Length: 170
Image (cartoon, rainbow, N blue to C red; front, side, top):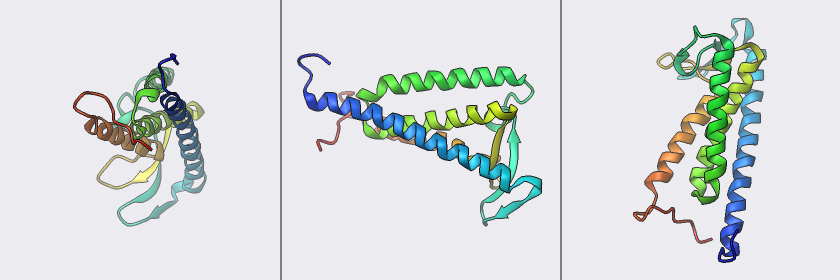
């Protein structure tokens, strides 16, 4: 913080980093608990039909849409771990100057990626359990990543013409 930095701006920067950490930890924990519950409750072919969505246990040894599922597990883990760390570093560094919506979006992306990496450590596979029939089976962490991307894009679209994010004056 420089001498010319107003206290409100410094407080906002601290708040955004704390928000980032809180959302990442909270969402990661919820996704990991959901994975555990899915493995326990849906094993042995058990499923739950919720209409458009079914809860059905599946495992993905690749990445999105099973891409790379033939690669050695350590390679997939190393690459996804490195990408996750890279995104987390970007989120941490950009949080102080980002809109709140962008911070939450980045946190959701980091949480989803982190939860999938942690889940993969267990057995070299990601636990999936949301099945639609018309889309590949996915998990809660995947929804975090998708929703996070939508929030980051929304933040970019809400950016002022001068290229700086206008914050809510509250």
